[in-house]
Amino acid sequence: MPNSHQPQPAKRDHGLLRQKIVEQLLAEVFRGRLTAGRHLVTQELAERFDVSHTPIREALIALAGIGIIDLVPNCGAVVRRVTSREVIEVMQVRRALECEAVRLACGRIDLGELQRLAADLTKLAEAKQPYPTRLIEQSRNIDSRLHDLIANSCGNRFLANELNRLKILFRAFRDVSYTQDKARNDLRRLAVEAREHLAIVEALCAGDRKGARRAMLQHLQGGMKYWARALPDPSDVSPLEEHHRRLKRNGVKRHAEIRNGATK
Image (cartoon, rainbow, N blue to C red; front, side, top):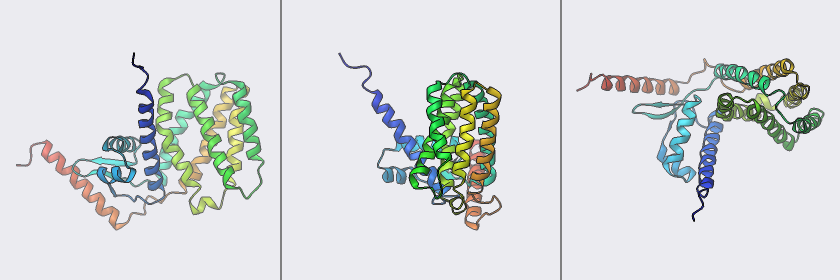
């Protein structure tokens, strides 16, 4: 009798492949390797990642869903300009979602797991500068552990799904901030962030919903300032980008004309 669970690993592998492509393209956008106005061609990406067109199309749809590219009629996928203003707007959305998630998660998380996080965060907060690469990676891992734990323990499936959908974007902002020149000179943020995380964990351990929400709010407000400065000013628009914007606008206009039967 065939095993009904046999296809599941393939499905998981497919999802991981799509996620890897999304993460790679996000990193290239935020590091300036994929500039605003750049067309992303499915065939070229499929050859580059050595995959079929299906995960590429799915990755592009995911990127469009979080506002990093535009899917323009007759033009395909076009990279959007991501500015510090947009980082702030994304963080405002995150603040609303995660402050509610941490409030709901309070009292639902295993105390032993929280205590292990607290021990790891205490070591990180007390680490001396300059920070070795392993501590930067450790900071990222702890950040992911804590925020995933909160999202998955909030008891609201729709809220958890929305946070999980957006976390790739949040973490791309986080990771690129460590690679920018301005951020590289201020790795003290790692210790500050560890203390912010520790305040969240301590409030969760105490069952203090208001305190957990307040600590999360303080943490996200600090991250908003730090991440936003790693990206370009919204007024800095290059002539090439303006040219691409005109092409995109013309493509949208042409599509509307065809749809309305205005063309022969």
